Length: 405
Ligand code: LLP
Image (spheres, helix red, strand yellow):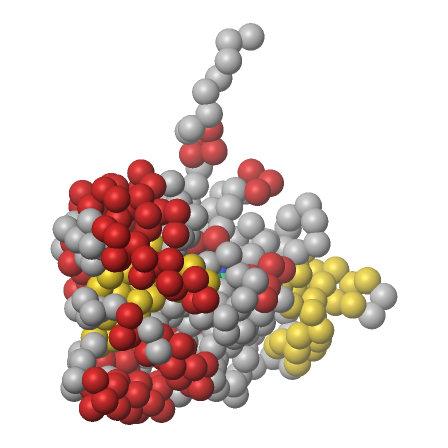
């Protein structure tokens, strides 16, 4: 089965379900997961899908069905994972700056927890001592990632306990018996360079002797996938070889065989997702050709928020002659999807597809301008399943309470 959807399939879906619509390809997710497990064969590795990338319950269920575990960034994501059928030991909760009550709930549910502040770690240690193994998220002071907004491991980042404060964690262990099972880092998103992961391992390995109960090194997510045609993603085979080399060396030196955890988000779902929009208005302004679509930054915020490139194709006139366009949305502020982009000639009514839309696409969508959020369709075994209907006007009012006049 090909690991991509054809223009014909995307057009059929747009005709059948309307636009704008997010389309996800189950087999592509499976293929990405297999690429990871194949590369790391023979190593004690577990992958936890970073569900923040895309939480539709049908996606979560598919992820579970292929044997992948799940990483959550809020207690609500934990509840969704439970609803999707994950067992507690398959669920990891890696939080940032959350109220301690969420950690209590996570503990009641019996899921793995990575704690990212001394404040919450202290509360946890005082309450539970050695009775519930936990992970600590450390800040490795490594600058990496596609852009500053998605770089999380540098020395001014809010994430984790700064690695230079690790002695405070050790003191807690000594005074309360706290069982630190996992050391965690997540250095950033879209990290192409395998050496960044190697540097992270180096930082954590120095700390291993401090934590006798340690069983797991959790290296977070952040594998890069190609967005621009011809671009290369993280070399997963090289990464696997490097990780194996480092962990084998640690075992040789110390006799300790640690498990490796990863939390990939984009790697699993980015390329499996397509966002199909329809051109509503063509407008010429001086030498600029605007193609306005029935969507905007409310549906796909990545270009405006991160300056991200999303490849676009005119699937209604793929073989048309090439012209240069600014592809823009219908929102009441500047919402460029692409500037000076060569595309096959666009007519009003044409379908434009945005690639790499599976991760942080629908998930970051909003109802800004009181627009409806897009529908979502899952393609599995070449069958189309509507997995989220488009909003209606009732949805916009659903949580509002009307004050009597
Ligand atoms: N683990 C932790 C603790 C994370 O914070 C993240 C992402 C991941 C794993 C997954 O990273 P990934 O494999 O997807 O790169 N909205 C941004 C990305 C923000 C990522 C936040 N944390 C974007 O659209 O690029």
